[in-house]
Image (cartoon, rainbow, N blue to C red; front, side):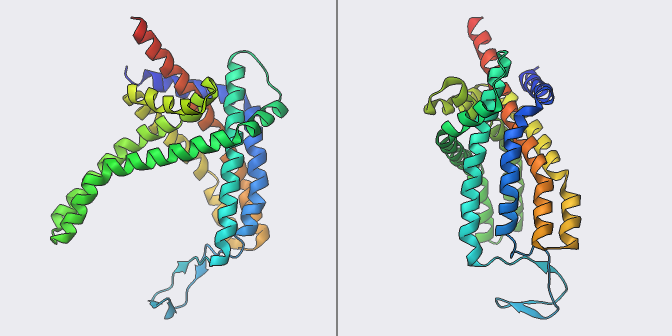
Length: 290
């Protein structure tokens, strides 16, 4: 079966994560630290702001009741700071989890304090790899969809609805196909760095994915579904809290409720990426030895 590698890696990652919940403690700690900061910085941004009939915003008159959220420029820099801090701290957590999982696979139980220090030591490298991975993934997604986007633009230029519709449908089909592959490939870049130890080795994650396209695509689809399910799980409770009150306390409570789910999602994604990388590397080695 062409997806056996992906299924095995995914199943092994689920079992391993369930048997080693302590690996989620570092991402959880970071999520709990960031939660109140996020709530405080976004305290003036109203996610559910009722609009009055006839009210005008920037030349647009709201004719029916609705909702909008407004964000002033004064919120931009704090949000950018929070984003950068979050990316840096989560990069450290990602290395800690992958390193801990790698050592646990070797029968070594590394203390959480050591895992945390290891993450901090490699925070810049992992952050850089994540940035480069994001750029590569975005470029690949744009390149794959560009011909069909041009078809949509051409249809609009010649006023052809059928041409525009065909372009949109083809664009969606291509992106739906390529997105799981890109998710699978990007999940292996940091594990490749942790395993090999050199910054440039993150490219090996993409190389392994390219040589195992269908396995990477299948794994990416499973990972997307799993992560979305975890992240969406607390959505109803969070929505109820924010509908009842949009005060700072309610926002902090909502953020703290989401923190454990975010930590589990990050931990599993990190472990799963490592297991996929190791599994596909082993498959390639077996194929070379035949």
